Length: 230
Ligand SMILES: [Zn+2]
Image 1 (cartoon, rainbow, N blue to C red):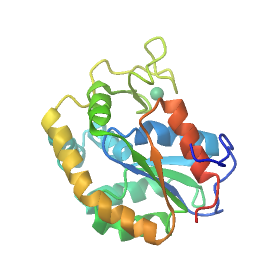
Image 2: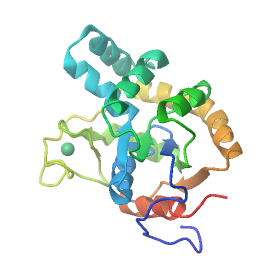
Image 3: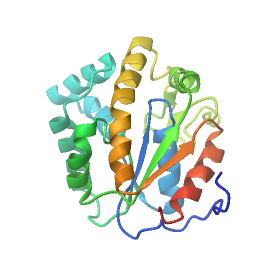
Image 4: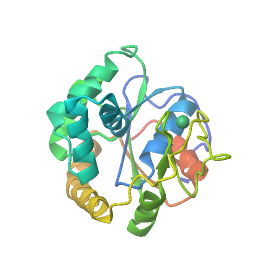
């Protein structure tokens, strides 16, 4: 934790408007931290992964194709994925403050994100986690069938049920395909530098070490978003 930062202030972040984006490699813990952060800050939560994973369950041709792309570790085309995100946002209050996970995935998408969210983010939190920890998390991650909340060794299901909604947690790990994990990490590594440089030029980037237990990482994130960025 940074010296001088308040440790658990749940008040709104430095700027009144703008989303908080969570960035980081696969396995950095964005999905879970995003949910917890949104809850603590009383913001809505929007996750590209959740939106995409919901589509195959609809059983449409598009949903099945998206399912196939996710299974293969390939990206869903941005016209499709951002279109789905816009559809989800259209059902929300237009001025709802948000915590957003999973976008941008590529450096060229920062303007899509700006359009989707109606402006630049007020804060971009980059979760830094060493590769072995990220891979271990991915290989053991399970998700709630009802709300999608990820669970793992440092955030286990409670009595076999989801810690958020008490739904059933799938006993099978989400990410059992090592090659797909590798491929997604490689893509993120190539894109991350440029994406972070863009947001750094706006002065909104905060880097947080995410190699600790979930509650500790949450406090670190709260500490950086609760103070105005330089
Ligand atoms: Zn749940």
